[in-house]
Length: 146
Image (cartoon, rainbow, N blue to C red):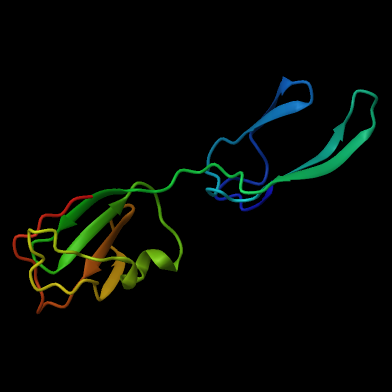
């Protein structure tokens, strides 16, 4: 397997016939990249007459992954930090880009927090990132939801 394979290994854990010339490839772990291009290459295989088969095919945009979700949001007692926990491990620079996060006033007030945090970093807990604002800014009566 090649292409936008996400966290799947190059080779499946098993291959099973479905019908005719259709086979199901199964991986023991990992996840496809959602809407990624998946390329499968058959190698060292033969047809019923013993002729070698060496071909590949690509399903453009065929990757079926699951988008991560925010599973919890928690304001810390210091009033200028918020922990965001995702449903799965995150990767890439976008997850720690402060401009990708925004606190808005939904009628409950956001205190003196600026809309965007000044920094975002892993908190040390699994799949959790800490959004931090300057200590001179804090929340008052903020209600957070995921």
